[in-house]
Length: 69
Image 1 (cartoon, helix red, strand yellow):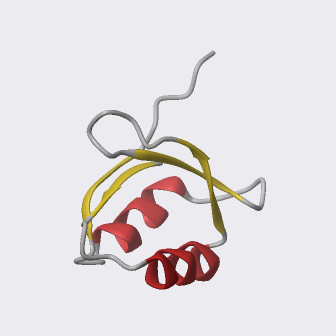
Image 2 (image 1 turned 90 degrees about the horizontal axis):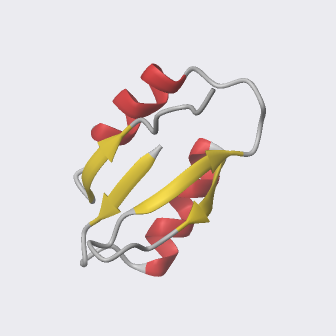
């Protein structure tokens, strides 16, 4: 999943959000401030995860990453 956090999001809030969702940063930030996140568990319902993350006002953008074959 790719996310762009709001600049107002504190490091503590960011870490809490990642922990609550079982995620870790796997890349970034890129030039626009986007981070790639990956799950700490191998089986995740990505559409449900994206929906939950989009409910957080501290995240400006949330989108699934394309899987490479």
